Image 1 (tube, rainbow, N blue to C red):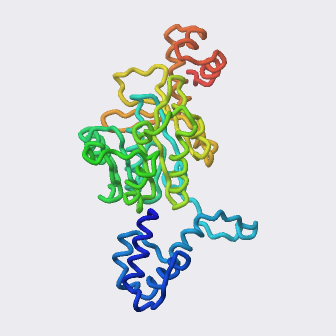
Image 2: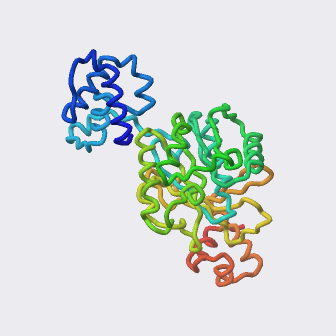
Image 3: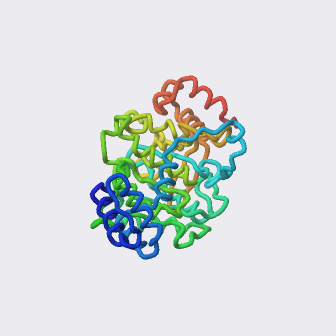
Length: 357
């Protein structure tokens, strides 16, 4: 609220009830008089002051208290009641987690993001991951045509053994919002535009950073600061976020590496060395950061979407089979190494693990 607005409201309050208050006012006591007027005639003024943005003394004091940093003693910290983190999609996504899925264009990022979103919304499974119970998901899509989104969602729902309730997966799409325009989530205005939609969602999917964070240079750390602050705020509210992002020419997530600092899980999708575009969505899944994962859960695997159905197997098993096929075709160790884009040691290891007979 501007100073001019506040002065106007203060004057209005005092003039309206000046006779009842029976008090002269000046610059030194004007706010006290206004507070007294508000306290005495709150019911009469409620609609007006809310519309104008006036806040009661109690509201102002409460808002100021929220702005103060708090430091807890070790006992206060240990006795603080906080909800335990639970699996949203076991074992890769948890409550109150910040995550990223990235890949080069055309690998299958949105296929995966939509697939896991539907699994979470329906309490179902996707690839190697399982949702324990249905949870509400808000999917903010920054670039996909509505017709393509319809086609993909219909394909997912048709083959799913669990069905999501209508309001458990909601989609914000640019074609549907062509008049309003899609929000720039790196700005306060953009974040406010989606705040009401986010209110009851447990997972927010941002697909993708490039189209929904348009302020600043993505190669600079400062361009991520506003998004990071927003995401940390959502986490503090008990929500999880999945950012979908592009990979750069070198294969790493594009732009500043600072993004990964606060993230719990970072998943990279990449095409296998023998990938053929006619195969459609076929890629390897790698965990480049896995704060809460270990052992088998972090092992890379290959996934393939064929006729609407996903299949998957361990990436090393796929490599081993490929190496053996090349060997049987007369390829030398050097040729296998070059063909598969692996080291000589890896080629030897794969062939040694290949069952004989």
